[in-house]
Amino acid sequence: MTTSEAPLSPEQGRTPPAGLTRARARQIVGRLTLWVVFGVIFGLLPIWIDALRGVMSPQRFSWTSILAKGELFIASSALAAAAVGELVFAPFGHEWQIMRAMMVGSSLLCCIGNAVAYTQVAMAGPGTVANVSLTLFVLTLAASAACVGLAAGR
Image (tube, rainbow, N blue to C red; front, side, top):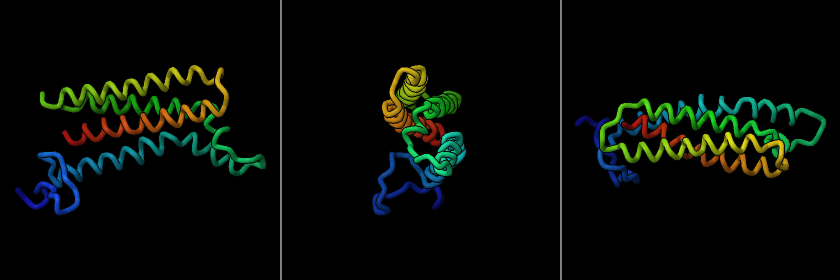
């Protein structure tokens, strides 16, 4: 076992799951970093552009007014769907099937929840849409990160 493949030790302040090597940990962190930059940040680009427009307008800037249109539901749904696709098509052994099914299920629930919530935007108030979209976004982000991390660490 080389130094880069040696298991992380508790003396380093981290206790990894059995079998997690430094190389695999670097691979997972690298994949999650790429996912955050290109999947999450660029996926939210329409919202960032709308926020920039709001900041530069003479009217008062409000995150509620930006999120009230429901675009975060669409971005979150796409984020969850992409994470499901990444995990479903990653090669896995039999020992990870239960974890894989749980992660796919949680991300699919987030995807469906965001899609259903988007259909209700016209009937809900702006504050409600903003709060629900932020809540679902955080849940979707966690579930999707778990899918991407699991796929990268297989």
